[in-house]
Length: 81
Length: 489
Image 1 (tube, rainbow over the protein chains, first blue to last red):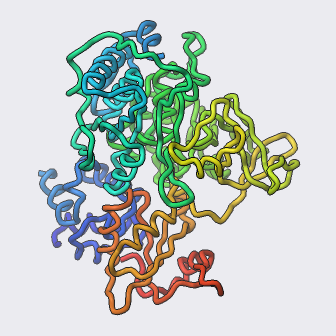
Image 2 (image 1 turned 90 degrees about the horizontal axis):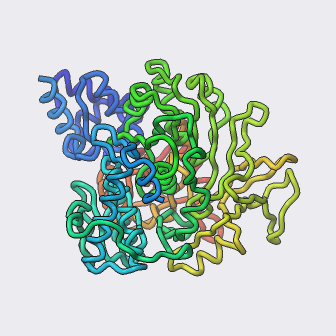
Image 3 (image 1 turned 120 degrees about the vertical axis):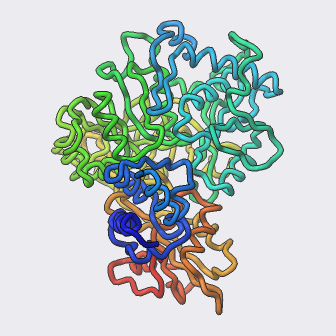
């Protein structure tokens, strides 16, 4: 994934995981963030961060935007417009 | 209880699910009766188990379905939408549920039972259904992690659930508050306690439809919430992310924490973040409820969990089954005024329930004044955040993976969760195990809170002379100097 939104979101995943996941590996990932190793509490941090910074509200129950990093980037970018 | 409250205050709001809607006592009763008629029309009979699979945004429908099942004389089995498909299948099979009522967008696993949304059952009949219920009848089964690896179904009678509930309007609990906020999931003992609070306490029960710490903090401020219930993990997250600095928490007069002991340093920080709140710790278990200890944070006894309340009793027990004197460490036992038991598991019941006492699975001691303190222990059940997780169950799921030869799961210290789940796995010869694939595999079998946060692929597990895995050594390998081949990627 490339682009400023992807880069910023990857940084936010790194921060949410306290640095355990690096932005680089997040940008390269295609599977779900949970499969990548983002724990449930860290996922909540990420959702709060995205809501604060981008004003995009994510539905944790909905699945789709959080199924993988590319779909997350797509969802956030789309709802920014 | 619902009928009485609905008659007293039909228009009063009982439940608010933020972003979803509200439920008044009058509507709660009318809809519960209608769904109960629907259940009976579909053949549900007293004693049948009816599972309730709901996510937090459907708390109002869950409350309706829960009361409807009990009005029909059947047994409510609340289940969380966070459960993995394999866990759901096990629980539905174990209790032989004859039906599953589901929240929005949720589907029960295939099986010999019918499913419906509560709204589909409303319509046919109205008014009381007239099913007679005795206090000793089974009312509810809640699944909780057991030490043998498989979840245990904890059965509770109507007498157990109704114990201590308050029906006199001038005696209602939390009378100082208009709203009681929590984010406990459906299917947990804490969640059920909140449902009972919605029924009999003064404030309306408020819960976020989709929980995050940020949304929780905003709700406190926007509603001017008076009573807040959370777990230590949530409290630590609120403090660490500075949410108390960005939101006004001055409305809170009672801050209750349950599920595990609040670390004393966190209690101190909470008293500063919630300047007008009494910080209170509750200690119980799914098996022991409604017995509990209550501790109002006291800097003079920072680690104490309190003394027994709610009609229960407490003792620290020695190896011979007798009570130990103050200061001596032993098993913590709690006595419930209306005991629960494991459903369809006499052997486990005999292990955990002893002559009216419940073995809590914790070690601790009492001080001279009867205050309880817990000490650490080695256990196959670890508490991660609000949840009990059976490491044996996680190991069992790992062993189902075709490329895994051996697995050992332990709890490791975590700054917010208290304990995080960590797995060391040994691949089969010549097998290449990707940790991401392994997690994806586990997601079919385990709930989110049971997924190992850390995974270490190793060549061999540390074992003692008899071949038993040495878990203390496994845990050590997750320390700062972990040197496994793969770590968490």
